[in-house]
Length: 127
Image (cartoon, rainbow, N blue to C red; front, side, top):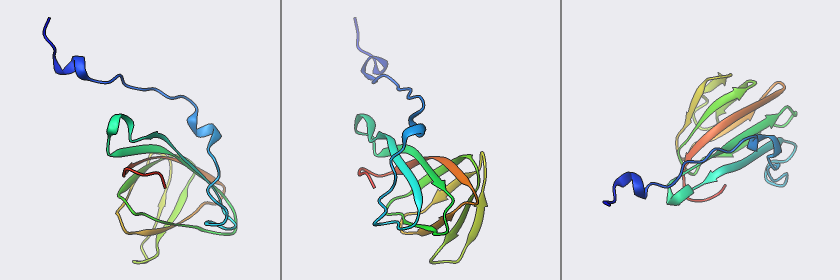
């Protein structure tokens, strides 16, 4: 029997309902906000990618997040209002919209009600 590349491949994964129990982001770092985030896959099988879910609930305080890595999000539910605090760029992203955040940007997130996104980040550490 010969070994092929497919014999060396790790099994793929399916994780259901992970988004339903996200932990809240540290209130000391993000005061007055209700942001929830977690990696569903943090560098699986040594990959340089991590992926997870981010939920934001409406509060009067915006959530400002610094990206120390490149990241992409796909909005699953709700609407995010986004502002790049360095450039002043303002955008709105709703269901099925894809977003790219370049490394080094600081993004202000707000929502009128609630928004949920799936993200993939090029990083080898948990935020």
